Length: 355
Image (tube, rainbow, N blue to C red; front, side):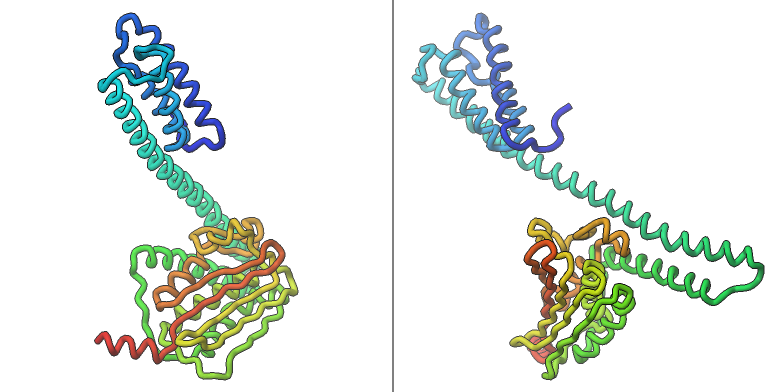
C-alpha cells in the first residue's frame, strides 16, 4: 500500500536511495539487451516512490542522484560524468524535467491528502463532541422524568426547571449548528439598525452572566463615556460579544478576572474581552477561529460547547465589515480577544454614497 501521507525527516530521502538501488539493479540485469539505451528511465520508479513519500524535494534529490548513477554506470564512457552526445543530453534533461513534474504533482497530492486527513479528524472530533453535548441534557431530562413518574402525578417545580434548562441548552446547540450551516451557505441575513454599543454589550453580558456567575468570575466593564452608535444587526452583534465572554468564562479558573472594554478608535468601535485564564499556546493561536477547535478539549467538554463560537464570532464580525483577533502571551498568561466594527456614521455615509 502506498504511503497515504507525507513522511518527515530523512525517511523519504532514504526511500529514494533504496529506489535507486532497486532501479539500478533492474537496469543492470537488462544491460546486455539495452546497452547504452534507457540509461535513466528505470530510475523514474525511484523518483516516483520518493515523491509520493516526501514530495518535491526528495524527488529532486532522487532525480539528481539517479542522473549521476545513470551517467556513471549505464552511459558510455562508463565511470565518467562526461556527456557523450546530444542524445544523452536530451535524455538527461528530459529525465530531470519529468522528475520535477512528478515531484510537484506528488506535492500537490500530499497536501490535498493531508487536508483531507485533517478534515476527517475534525469531523470525528466534532461528532464526538456533539454526541457528548446531546447525551448530557437528554440524560438529565430522562432522569427527571423517571423520578417524576416514580412520585406519581406530582411535578415538582425544581425538576421542571431542570428540564427547561436542558431543553434550552439543546436549543442553543441546534441554533449553533444551524448558524454554521447558514454561514457556510451564505444564508445569514443582517437586519441592521443604528443602536448604541452600550445596549449591545448589556445584552451580551446578560446572556453570558449565568456562566460567569457559575464560576464566580469578576466581570469589569470599562466603557467609554463617548457616544458609540453602531450600524449592526443587534442580535448578531450580541452573539459575537456573548461568545467572547462565555469563551473567557469557560477557560478561566474559578474566581478569575474578565474585563470588557469598549471605546471609539477613529471610525471604528474597538471592543476588548480580556481574561487571566489558561491562555493560548503559540501554535494554537492561529487556529482558535477555526471551526471545531477548542483550546483545551477536556475543559471545553466539561463546560459544553462545540468549538464553533469563535468561528461564528469572526464570521459575523466580518459580515459587518469588522474584524476579530486573538492575543495571548502563552499558557497561564490569559488571553484577549479584540473586535472592531465600523461606527454608525461612517457606515451610513458609505452606503449613501454607493446608492
